[in-house]
Amino acid sequence: MTTFSVALAARWPSPTRALLVEADPSGGDVGTRFSLESAPGLVSLAVAARRSDDPALLWQHAQVLPGGLPVVAAPPDADRARAALSALADPTTGAGVLRTAASASDSVVIVDCGRIDAGSPAMPIVRSADAMVLLTRAHADDLAHLARRLNAIGRWTAHPAMLLVGDGYSTTDVARELGVLPLGRVPHDPHGAAVLCGRPSTLRWGRSGPAHSALGQIAHKVAKVLIAEQAPAPAVPRQAPADNQPVPVLHAVPGVPANPISVNGLRLAPPPPPNMENISRGGQA
Image (cartoon, rainbow, N blue to C red; front, side):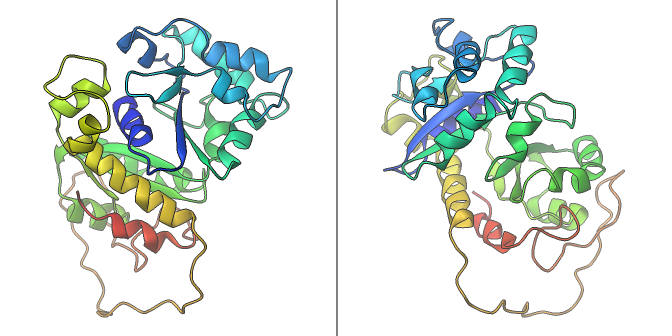
């Protein structure tokens, strides 16, 4: 999750400025991986947000990774991370700081919320986001757990999307079983992951490192799909699918309720979020 968040922010298309906020209640990893100072970071931001709503506040509490990416790192200690998140996600104090920075036309804020659930202190941040990308492995146990949460997850944000991680069931099988068309699959890329985690690698950070890694390339594609999803929809009547025959129901994944894929390619919650057909253009990497 964190590694892909770094990749997504690092490969966000220019000229938009991307900033990564580590909002994992279980504690952060970026600071340790890149030997960052303990401050500034998420804790100092949460304190400052109580006294100021300056749009530049988020950037003032960021540190810069070797490739030039600004990041607001969470402390590795879970108790401190949860306390900072609880203060930052409070709508009367810190939540406006993230929303203000994300609303600027020349910037985007990528927030890594870790393993999210309804009780997470990061949930207010998720609910106010323009889009949410859920990462999941494509094995039977992962999909069985996910299938029972899809209705709730689909109501967290207006624009939910899903990415598969690593090997497992195919994108087609997952789509037909869950009724959700994934954006694609995050590949196994140890060299690309190493440079994005601050470890020695044959690649070097900079425009050449993430850009030439498989991980960086899929992150760039996901970013472009998310940007397209936020663009105003053209005033064109929705076309009916060429083949009106019902999609066959598969039973390939044990524990996942049988469910055909919807005609829009995504059915996370009733009724389906609008314009999600744009997400399907991401395809597989």
